[in-house]
Amino acid sequence: MAHGWSQPQAVEQYNTAIGVGYVDQPMLSRLERFSLPGEGRAPQAAQLIGWARLYGTTPLRLVAPEALGQLDAQERAVLLRFATTFEPSSNEHQEPEHAVVPRQIGLGTAATAGSLERQIAVASRKALRFAATAEGSNVGPETLDGLRDEVCRLARLYTTRPLGILLPDLIDTQDIAFRLLEGRQRPEESRDLYLAAGAVSAILAEASHHLGDIASARMQARAAFVCAENAGHNGLRAWTYGLQSLIAYWSGWPHEAIRYARLGAGLPTTGTSSAWLPALEARAQAALGDVDAARQALTRADAARQRAEADELDAFGGTLTFTRPRQMYYAADTTTWLPGQAADAVNQALEAIAACESAAPEERSYATEAGSRAVLALAWVDLQEVEGAHEALAPVLDLEPARRIRGVIGTAERIHAALRAPEPPGRQHTPAARRMQEEIEAFCQVAAATTLPRGR
Image (cartoon, rainbow, N blue to C red):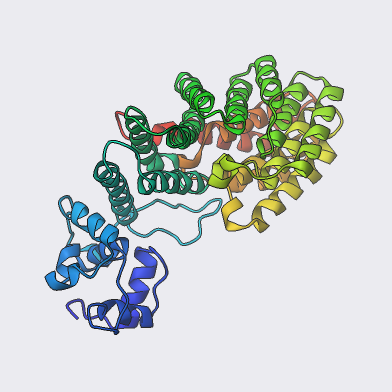
């Protein structure tokens, strides 16, 4: 009423600007009447926080004192902990800059998580810290469940959100896991904690690599491996070897990439890492010019995909599982290195792009789609189709700087080098080739690492 909104208008504003669980008008009515006996539905803390941001007030002002006791105990704890740091804005409902988070995020979308999503994520981690304290010196089931849920959330957001938005949450979650491990737990609880800590360390290793910080990436990968050793988890061990192979490949060390991929492939695993490791080896072998070894590795990757069964690491989802579209991208990228195979690379890249576009939401990845389009452009250049290459690369060049990760920039640089190649004579001097080189240079100069706040 204060904003002059009808219930439908309030619902529209909430779903557009907040998006913490879809709300319709009947649900809003039930939430508003939740304190009446048999009348309504108790809201979640995250919903109250979201409505408070939308209305420019504080969460506790939306709940009468006598109604606070009717909330679920955990939701009430979150609300009370969050209330001490909440800073309302009187203009939140006017769609402030960076406040709206698109409901679907894909390649080319200038998507930034706004202050609303950020505040709610902070509240979630405060609740996790509170639960860890409240359950005493040993780790209780609520703390473990909360930590697993947070790692799962971050792994799945990683494939759609810019890195700069997720880094504070990743760092904080790793800190929580490491602090919990400093205490005393039962063996089975320690094992689950090490798995969660290793998983979030693996994500941070990938994030550091994507930002071009190779030293930090390798250090995080080592931390993830130590956690895997303590958890006795072959799937996590294999994944960390895959990360080290990935880092080595993009650092220009293909022999090192092959060594790590083979170390991981030698472990008995059932998860999708069993397909990732030979796919990593295939690409590195192709970069070295060993056509037979590359093709054999691709065959092993396909066979491993057929046998793979999701393990505990795959259950986190997102960037901690090797999806089918991602495997198709690796195959296309491998083929671009093979002489005389550009036409096959075009077809494989097109299939990878189609798989990205039709993938289930949990399998969508802007990095995989961007990589597939960049590989398609590279294959078109090899076929002397510069205009086709430019068309394929255009959506990649439109990526906001925060999404210009190391792998995408690395492939763009390969395209730039291919356009400069002396064969066929004269191609590098055509207006189309020159224009594309200039666009790639401008693209590569503003990478994801340059968008981070100072001190990160």
